[in-house]
Each structure stands twice: as structure tokens, then as C-alpha cells.
Image 1: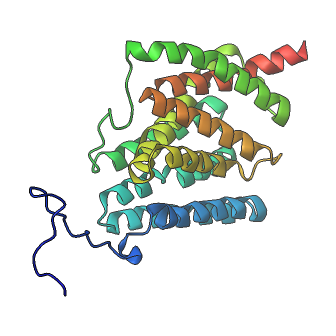
Image 2: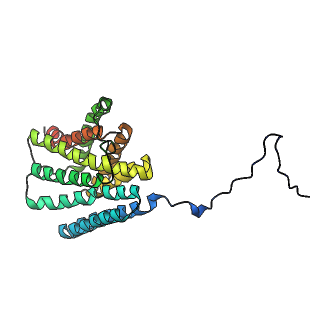
Length: 276
């Protein structure tokens, strides 16, 4: 005969009934498999079109993905997804500039300045309505960053030397000062856009580990059209190392130093050393 009185494990502590479990399909699907993956594939396809079909179709495909990112970001109600979509604008915009600027026959330094102004302007325009502060973009210059920034110099030099040895890129001969200026402004552009804005947006959506991998893939995407094909894994490795460094330091300063050192090593120091 079933008792209608509550059971007790002791006189003072009643045994609580088990809590009901939510069904499996009640959980929301992870964001990793949704919109961010769709745009990762779309950006890769747009870059592949540029590599296979030429500059004109490449620019059209990149502009189309850029348009989708802006409109979709404005239409979505989820703040984290909007932040990621608008941070991804830097990828097709970088590719568009890489395709368009060589046709203008501009020297390297003005072209680098134009690219930096456009990319950083887009980052600021996108970040402001999302209430991303300088701290959110990891724009910090603190004494605590100096040890890692110091280690970033030899790291960048080694990565640049390894990249030059493997890829043997064709670089125009330039004097020291232009190389240093281009290295600095290119590092500011890349690190603020990719490891500042994009990495922060991705980390809020995925967590640190997946965000490092995701942004490293996106950093490698614009290299799909380059020859040799080893440029893609090389860019992924650099993107992953710089992203991990930024997550560890909570600042883009060490990554900026490493990126500038890499460019100096790739375009100036390593070619000069191997030439002699």
C-alpha cells in the first residue's frame, strides 16, 4: 500500500523530489554552427572567386558579402551576433582594397595609409553604435604589457624569417624608413581590426579557444588567392599566435609589436641577410 506521507531521510531532512530535466531539443543550438559559419564559408568562396575568376568578379563577390554583413548585422536583434557580423566587415573590405589599390599604381606607403584609414574608419563606425569602448577593443598601453611586448619582437622576427624562407615573396626594394612606417601602420590596422574588434566579438559569442581558431581562419582567408598555397597555413599560424597573445595579455599592444617586427623581418631584414 502506497503511503501519502512524504518520505524522510531523517526526522529533520525531507527527501526532495528529483528536478525535471529539460528535453534535449530545448537547448539552443551553439552559435558556432549558425550564422558565423555561414559567413566564414561565404568569405572563403568570395576569395576563391577572386583567385579563379580574376579581379573584377572577385571585387563583385567581396562587395556582395560586405553588403550582406552590414544589412544582416543591422537586421539582427542579438547584440553579440550583430557585433560579430559587423566586425567581419574588415575581411571583405581588406580584400577589396588589396584588389583595387594595385590598379591605381600608387606607391606602397600611400596605398598602406589609405588601407589603414579605411579599415580603422570602418572599425570605429561599426564599434561605436555597439558601445565598444577602447578597453573592449583591447586598446591599452600599460607597463604590464612591456614584458610580453619585448618577447614579441624576437617572435615577430623569427616568424617573418620563417615566412620569407618558405614563401619567398616578391617584395619591392625600399629603404629602411618606409618599411618601418608601413610595418607600423599595417600592424595597427590588422591588430585593431582582427585581434581587437573581431576577436572580442567572437570571444563573447564562442569563448576564447574557438574565437582564436575562428579569427585565425578569417585572417588566413584573404591569402587564398596568393601563391604559393603555403601562404594560407602560414597566415593561420600567425593569426592564431597573435590572437592567443592578445587573449593572454588582454591587450593588442604585444600583437602590434609582433606584427610590425614580422613585416620588417619579412620585407627588409631576412632578404638582406640572405642576399649577403
